[in-house]
Image 1 (spheres, rainbow over the protein chains, first blue to last red):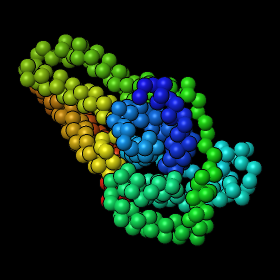
Image 2: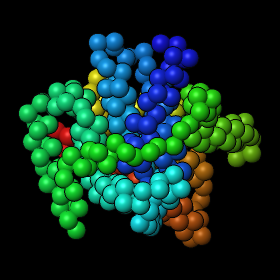
Image 3: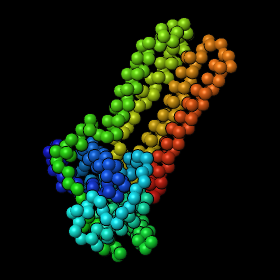
Image 4: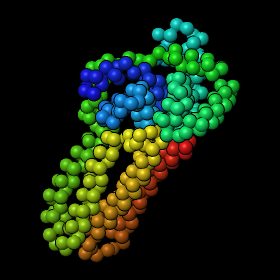
Length: 158
Length: 180
């Protein structure tokens, strides 16, 4: 894969990376840094990509790995507001914006490992694909997802 | 909210768009936020210590002290610099395996090793530095108090460094535990 092909690939899949950044970092500056770090790590490991797996699977693996492994800067106080500040102008549907905010505020309270598994589930990956990316058995993915779903239901009920 | 509803909400999330030109700039090491800071710090440290090493021999009576004390001082200064250079390479390659769990385990082992060397190199730096400057010194009360204060400052710095690393290691271990 040369640089031009790589740029096309990242451009096509940048939505995935942005969602992961939003889930793992609270402030815009940190998200931008994480986006850059993920892109850099993808570029550094693009030679390790094997054509027998889907490109999106490889992107999920490197992006989630980077989000968990990079050390966060000192925690800043984050004030949650009912609307999404950076999306507010683009999001005319208030109810949808509120649903998204509820979803993200619940997901952000999960631990890093749980965030990775639920992200892959929400992205519609099969249990087998999730198992391959995380490095656990397919059955255990099911067990983990059930536990995470209960946690999320409790968080949303609060 | 039902889980199908969660999925559909997730799929409606709009994300910002970054142009391919901006993405291309991100591939360069010079633009990398962490690596840029490490490089800046390393350059300042290397320049500072090079100046010190070229001057100390005459300015701080290195020529009047035994060779082994001089070697120890140079070694205690070079060790943290070499360690920081290793850290630069370490920060460059975060992905260390074929799946997330394997990669994080390998990465954790490396972080542990790196943290241990970081603490040891700081201690060696303190020992080398203090031995050099106190060698052949006749101690009075003021000098002894100064030495104790310097020692305490180094110990505080050491404790803080240890706490930072411990926090990072605990967080990584927790993530690995949750995935396994």
